[in-house]
Amino acid sequence: MEKRTDITKASSSSNPAQSAGVEQGTGRPDIAKVSPALEPQFHLSAEQLLELVERGKRHKNYTEYIDHILVCPICRETYKQLLETEASIREVRRPRAPVVWRWGLGLTAAAAALILVVWFNLPSTPPSWQVALRTVNGVAYEGATRLPDWLADARALYESPPSVTRSGAAPSSSFALIAPDPANEGLDTPTPTFEWRALTQAERYFALLEPLTKPGQPIVLKVAGTRATLPEGTQLASGERYRLRLSASAQTDTLMDEAIATYEFRVLSSEELSYLRWAHENASNAPYASALTLYQLGYYRESLNLLRRLPKDPITDQWLRAVEEQILLRGGTL
Image (tube, rainbow, N blue to C red; front, top):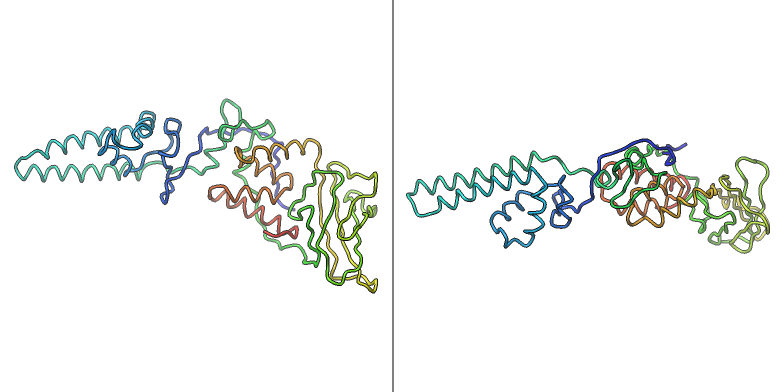
């Protein structure tokens, strides 16, 4: 039994923040690509500060950098000291005795050393999910999107991904289910249609659907070619788990032992269907909360696709491995 995190349980989480771009090759945010006035938890790089001091208002990102400096005490103090150092350097660059020039060079070296000391002592940039998922005045957000009450604890849930056991993949079978996607456990309809790829030498196919809470009471599905549907007037129960069993016989009417496959599905409740709609509608503006929701509902393929688009960090990587494991255990492909 895999570890599951219940999205319907709530606790408290905090640490409001905003998401930001990342400066190429450094792992630090590119202040020029975000709204600096809203990002005081990030800092300008040493190169950015030195270039700003040197070029002043001629700098292409002058307004953005100054806006950030106004709200960031660390960058403001560093910028102030650099300006003072630059003023001293300009003063000593006036034609004087050679000893003065040596003093000016010393000030330049001191300025560079100051930048390095401040920069390497800056707090490291937090993972993107910590920036995106936050609580403000008791209300959960991802970025600018307010999360529904059932996702009030999304941040705490995301930072505790399921463990990965790697207990093995599903038994191999000649069958290749096409629909529903075998990677997913959830069913969003009480009247699903099952489809699979045709098997070589198979003459007939058989399909049974058995409710796991009522063993021994299978539903015999209507098979037409490589498609199977429920008998007319039959619907699957909301919230129930079912095991689909597919088999085939050859032209001699003998059962093909290698052509047997089983898949398990769970029909979503009406409440869970509303969660699924929310995840699909907010996948772009709230990808972390949507990926978490899709995982909980058994929509592993959609969850995996979202997680693959997110910035890499240890927590997100563990989520990726956990979702991939579920897909492989169900006989799906990555």
